[in-house]
Length: 317
Image (cartoon, rainbow, N blue to C red):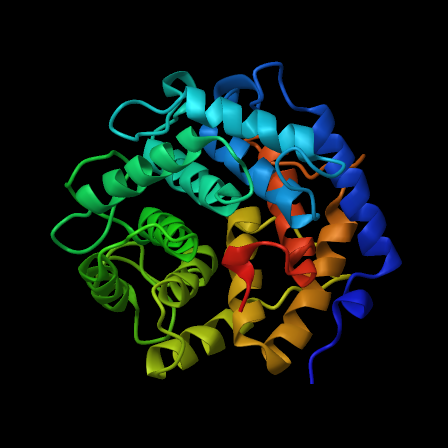
């Protein structure tokens, strides 16, 4: 049996969520974007913030954060070129395909809820760009071209493709099949995932992403799933034993909570309360902190905490 959402989102978690949403809304910039310093205007942070607002139950133009969501859509549409590439170059960092993937994912989640016709046009072009830049191994890398690949960017893109397909946008089956083979080549014997095929040891964040990559590609059963799930349980959060953040803390838990939600049962019932309480303890004055951007960390934490709401199509079982 799985605990109901109302039991999992405790009063303390609800307070943390509301404070986080209020903080995030207050950080939206005049152009609809988010971020500061080198990440000011980063399209990935905009997309993730939009997802956090959607996860609370607001939709474009409706609900407490409907206006913020609509302004994020405006910002992303304004920074999409004719090829469908979504990017704000000054804040693209070294990996603009991350931004494109998270922005495409957000737009796919909004598709059908926002009436403007250009949203569908941009989304189809954004999906086509992902399909066209898949490399010969079946993966993706930092730039929108067919070069090398890594598991982190690959999972970001296949998750965007899954969201788009859920929204009714055509995605070639062979694109997904090739991605599955790439993910299989990245999995190590211990069940975790290497950064690239046969390159390096397993680690928490990329292994959480790898498992979600399989789920996004429609692979829900098999020895690769079982081994990955067992590997991830080594990293079950330990509330009350506060430690410094492990590498890619927010990123890893963003994927891990999705994996556990889809696995369900004892995986979910053990993982969610643990990460929930760990995140509540780490919250500062309404926000979570990250060297990348506090808005990024806050959006990721809110996505983790709000999974039991089951509001986002991409997170639904």
